[in-house]
Image (cartoon, rainbow over all chains, first blue to last red; front, top):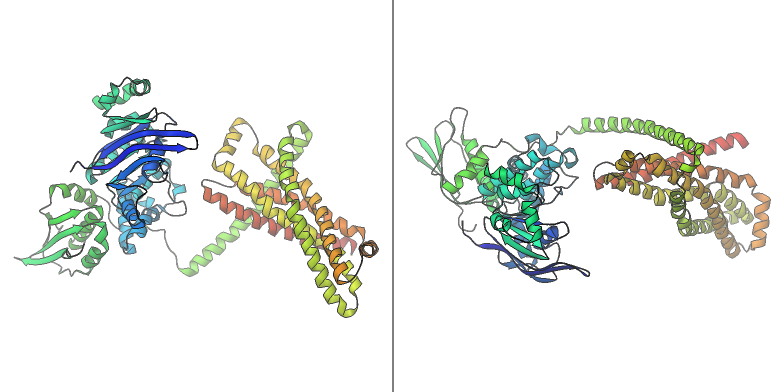
Length: 256
Length: 377
């Protein structure tokens, strides 16, 4: 695995009207890394993710994915870029009028010209890879539980064999056991497929279980480090986050 | 991949079929590889081996194609082994190899004939269930109305006034304009036909009776169903999606009392008022047209109207208004409360709400017609 930088954010500033969300965020993500973005509510974690995905235009600064700068791409380059990452939105964001298998086939239909049989075979193993039972393929999103919907969303995100996987609060709304299973699933897939993962999360368990490094959003900037480095940081919010009541359990779960 | 088209080569060596795989096995070329692999001749009984050592690049789609080929070559007695697996490919091949086989289970499909039968049956049962359900809802609304009548302090006056403004006052421009135009059209067409018999003056009869008895109220009811009934469904449906209605129930608020009753009361009051307004605007349109086409002055028009149009024509129209209003409000609210799950459902129920209420308005209008003709002849 080469240690290439595949996401590079420099001096990012995002603003909504008079409110500045980010002011000078610098983040680098190297290939094969699992990076978590954490921060208090309202610090713009999801906005940062949406900025990287190109859904929110930054007011200043540059975002490069695979060395290509966002906002300076032709439609074809944009298209190629989109094939190289998959996104899991918070509630799966599955298309409600399509079955799970059809949902997974949407990116395949859009970006490849495979035969319907092959597409449905690919959809079937992606669904199985995401840990869903076989009969889930023919179900509609409204017939699935929250956890299953996330798994289906993950199957869709993986449809095109992306190199980067973006996750928005993957474990929010899951019970602790379900959340741990989901963490393991992502960890396994990351290792098997050699993915680079960027996730927005609140969940300390996820952090300890699968993340290599953490970007904490405080004071409109990002502070980046490994969990150990950040645990020693004296910033009040970071200190509170890593040494609060929930943190000891999560840390103990790892060391035991 | 240009050039590297030799994905699969077959060689015989000592009674064993060696299938050599090479090149890029990725999603990009999956279609071509799949076509080649499925056209490959399988010679049958003898043992085969899959050599994957020369594969340069492999992703999950490629791994699936390898696995698919392996399963096709294998038979019940003999599982084809993979040879020369590269270490970084083995994880992927093991992952895919361990998964259940076959294409995704599609929803079961039926023959066209049984599908038609099934859909007809389903639709019939749905209509019956719907009718029973509507009756149920009507009962519930009536009971809640009476309960609120007993304790008037529980009536949501603010909400009522708000909806009265929305469905009544704000509907005035559109209802007025359309009624006026329909009056114009009726007068013009009527005058055109009646002139052939020299009976132009009967245009006033035609206009007065049809406008007051049927046209104005039907037109108003249909506009209100499209404008306010759909709005009720969308409002309540969105609340349903956000679980606001459930939250209300847990707090001890009755959605029937809080959401349905103020809306129903507002339409009950607003629709008769709108109907009178539509009557006036329709007649005004007719009068204007009579002036231009038939040279009947406004004074003549009013005199003639008083002479030939009995007052009960006006009352027959007006009596229907509160009934239509109540029905439109009930359908709108009920379809809203039936929303479940997604935003998709809000759209579906809103469409339904408009269709069902317009349908019922016309059916009830027909029933009224029969009733009145039996009473007054």
